[in-house]
Image 1 (cartoon, rainbow, N blue to C red):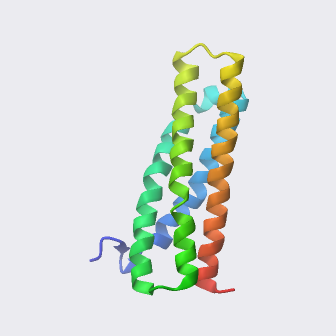
Image 2 (tube, rainbow, N blue to C red):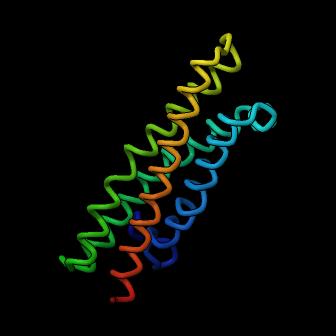
Length: 148
């Protein structure tokens, strides 16, 4: 049995759905937590944990995708999808760092207006960047599979 297969099916299309759902949800939680203190208090450690799960899922998804790409061969659309896919990890790493910094700052620090603004801006940038990358990667993947 191949490491990147489950019951004979390639792992990539199975776990990519987790990334497609969790990245935007985590980004939303991060941004809302940065902008609305009541939501940040309710979410607590959930946002950094979700960001960690995303951070771990992205490289696993990439490895599974590379294994699938080797089976498919050097198709230009697949190569484009893979190139875009490699750009997601830095965005999710940044989102994770902002989530941890946000949680630590508001949990242990004395939040000041300037720090709140910086965290909010970083949350919006990393959340939006991660979500946009997921959309671009997904669109390229759909074109690679379905053509067009």
